[in-house]
Structures are given as C-alpha cells and as structure tokens.
Image 1 (cartoon, one colour):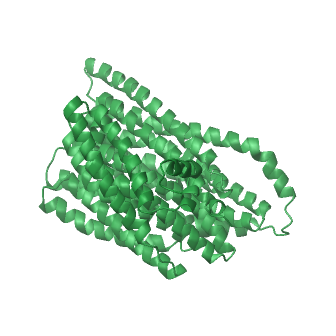
Image 2: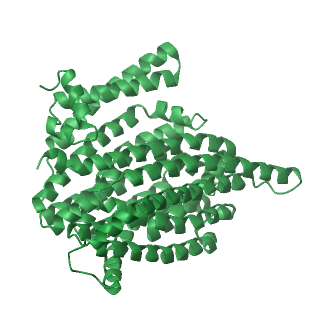
Image 3: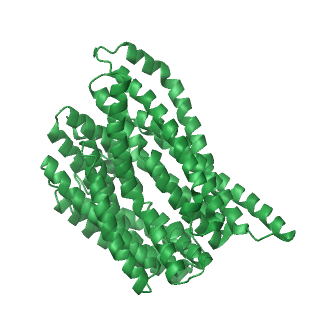
Length: 546
C-alpha cells in the first residue's frame, strides 16, 4: 500500500486542522472588539464562566464525536452497517438525556461554581448550549467514523463565524441596555451584561452548526438506508447490547477527556480562591487578570494545537479499525506518521511564539496588557509541543482500547500541577505566570506517561532524530531569522503589522527549506501530507529534492 493511501487520515486531519485554524483565528479576531465593548472585567467574567461551562460540557458531551467515531468505525470495518446506524440512533437518545440533565445542572448550580456572584448570570447563559452540543457531537462523530472530516470542518467554521458575529452584536446591545439602566439610576452591571451578550454567541454558533450537520445527514440519508439494506453480515445487535457498548466506550471517553481538560477549570478555581480569599485582591481585578491569561495568552497558544486536535480526531477511527483487524504494524505506521507530522508543525510554532510573542499579541490584542500578555505567552511556548503530543497520545490510547489509561494519567498530572501551582500562588508573586508553569507541568507529565503506555501496549518506539531533533534545529534557525527580520523592519517602518507579517512568512519558507535540506522529511512523507504534491513540486522547483 502506498504511503499516500495509507496516510490518507493525515489529509483528513489536514482538512479538520485547517478548519480548526480558521476557527481559532476568527475566535481571536473577535475577542479584541468584544473586549473593547465589555471591558477587561467583562472579559474576566466571560472567561471564568466559560471555564466552568467547558468542564460540564466535557463531562457530558465534548468527547462524543471521538467516542462515537471509534464505535461506529469498528462496525463499519466489519461491514455491519445496520449496527452502525443503530449505534448512531442510540447515541442521539443518550445525548438528548444527558445534555438536558447537564444543562439544568449548570443553570441551577451556577451559584456553586462562581466565586464572584456577579458572574452567575453569565454562566447561566451558557447552560442551554450543552444540550445542543451533544446532538452536534453525534452527527460529527458519525461522519468522522466514515473517515470524512469535510462536514465537521465546514460546521466548525460556520459555528465560529456565527459565534463571532452574535458575540459582538449581542455584547454591544446588552451593554447599551445596562448603560441605559445606569443612566436611570440603576446599578452598574455593564460588565456582566456585556459578558452575557458575548456568551450568547457560543450558543448561536453551536445551533447553526447543528442545523448544518443535520441538513447534511438528511442529504445522505438515502445512501445510508441503501447500505443498510445491502448489509450481509447477518448480525444485528440488540438495543441492550448497543447500550452496553455505548456505555462501555462513551463513558470512559468522557471521563478521559474531562480529566484531561479538568486542569483549566481547576486552575481557575484555585487561582480565584487564593487571590481573592488569601491575598485579598479585589474580585474585579482578579477577573481582569485572568482575562489576560485565558482570554489572550492561552487563546494564542491554542492556535498551533489545532492540528494536533484534528489529528487526534482523525486517528481514532483509523487506529480502531486497524486494531480490530489485528493489523498492529499498520497501526504503528500510522502512529509514527501522526506523531512526526504534528512535531514538524508544533515545534516551529512553539519557537515562533517564543521569539515573536510581543508582536503577535500586539497584532491580535492591541491594548494596555501587551507586555504582560506577551511574557505569559512566552512562558506557555513549551506547553504547545507538550499539549500537541499529549492530545495525540490520548487519542492513540483510546483508539487501541486503553480508554481508562488516559484517565489515570490525567489524575496523576492534576496532582502534580496542583502541587506546583498552590505554593507558587501562596508564597511567590508569580501570579499568572504560576498558571502558565502549572499548565506546562500538567501537559508534560501526561505526555511522558502516555508515551510510556503506548510503548508498553504496542511495543512502539518513536523515532527521535527526524521527528524531534531535526525539526528543533530547523526551528531554532527559523526563530533567529524571524526575530532579526522583525526587529530590522520595525526599526525602519515602526509599524508592527508591516514588520510581523513578513517575518512570519519568511520564517515559514526558511523552516520548510531547512527541514528538507536537513532530510527531516522525505518526498514520500511530504506527499502524504495535506496538499503534499504541491509541497513536493515546490521543493523540486527550489532544487531541494531531485
């Protein structure tokens, strides 16, 4: 089998990564106008509420696409099309029930989560979105199981566009309502109202994405029906068997994903509790500071992780099918390709953020927090690589059936990062830098433990030289060049945007040239990547390959 065909999942991941990248850029672009509208305190309220909304979403629905894609992919590999569709329908019933319960819990339990009572209404605005996301997740997982990521990709972009538009418009409208109330002698709730308006955008985006995915399903329903009629497997699972299968896979996936992502909500709680309760910092100031960390620095650091998340989603059904068919060498080959691809992308991204942190933050968030946010982003640079690798290895373990292993590793990592975070907040003045250090520790511990587990289960050892060392060497040269170009152009033009964009473009080209020259990637591997034939053609025109 050719490398191109064998690594087709990398192309599918590329589609999903492209959509994820565009979505995150849109997400970054609308944060600045929203921040101007609702202010730093409003952004802090939004960020805190979003963190708790996220953890309830993780527990109830977030990992549904990955879990469903794994279960259905296994049935499709056995050509059990009726069972695959039956799993799809049962999954819809499951998320309808769980999503409703989770939404009600978040709405009525908002007071339990929020340390600042002013932010409770913001969290309640997020509550209905959880019910919608579960259904959306099942539809996305169904198409991902068929190794088709285009539907999910388009829905993600639609979701983020609508989110951006509604967030800005609703935030502006709500702020005007609050200002009118203040003018009439009422309390000043402008920041809270603005955050509530922005939170509406999340629900609107999910709703539009859900309607899109449902429309796509209806367009393909005849094909799915015809395939079920041609099912010759002779096997039809009972609803009891399918319910047990869903519970046995979905629940561990949910727990694994929730545990993996619990660090954000836990860190938010620890940070706000210590800063308000122990150090007696004003709650509005704490919210504003946290907005700098989560609303600016973390959002930027998450952009390069988009490809790792996409690769993780694409590799689960691929690995599951290979393991079901007992093609273990094929599974190892796919793991190697996936890890190498995300390292080729995430290592230069981390170094790029390290050397261009200030101009990138200045480009996306031109406000008075520039110095603070850029230094935090530099502190988070290493976590980009660690989160990328740990995200992928989590999905690899889930794909090979070790769904409980990531849960155990996440718990160990949570203990480790909390052991680091609490003393740093209590007895140092690191403040937000403590959160950045804790995030790096967390992702690092999971990364190491997951790699050890994959090695133990599959006897798999990742090649080091071309996967890690060559990309790092090329990225260091790239980073130095990017810094020199930026500083040189800025001295001449005194314009950040005129300086940073050429610096980034030159850095990308230089990294590609060095990666090929250092033989960090072969022609066959390039062809297996998204638009690989264009990359190969470019390399040959530049006389980097023969």
